[in-house]
Image (tube, rainbow, N blue to C red; front, side, top):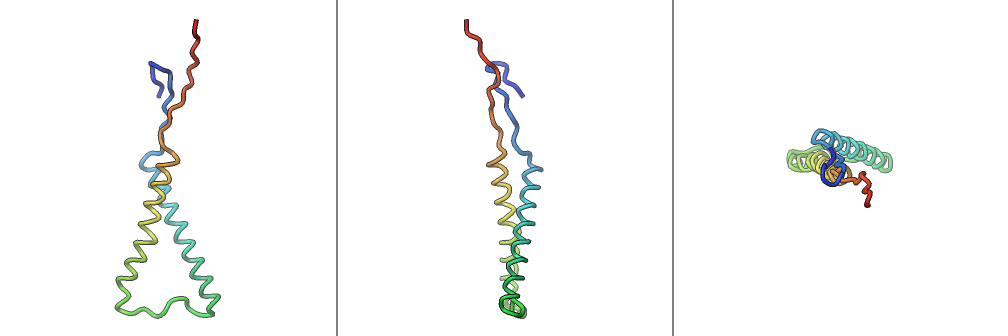
Amino acid sequence: MVCRGCGAEIVRGASRRERALIGVAFVIAAMLIGVVLLRALAIARGGAPLSSPKAEDGLLVIGVLIAVVVIPYIMGTRVARLLWRSRIRFCKTYQHQ
């Protein structure tokens, strides 16, 4: 889109769908990092990195699920909004007489 008055070109930023895809990519990356860290901990300890599950750990599982899915998604959409926002470029050259 180009402004008729000053000749500035407005470059559009990331759409809602593109920001969502970047957020999902952040979630996938966070899950992969979590799996690698748990595997490295299992190798270092020589056994399972987590203890056997108990009924009291249900709230902890929900909290970890929120931490691994929701927080990276929000961070990814905010990074996409910051890096790929709408910009104005001036492309018209003025010829003064």
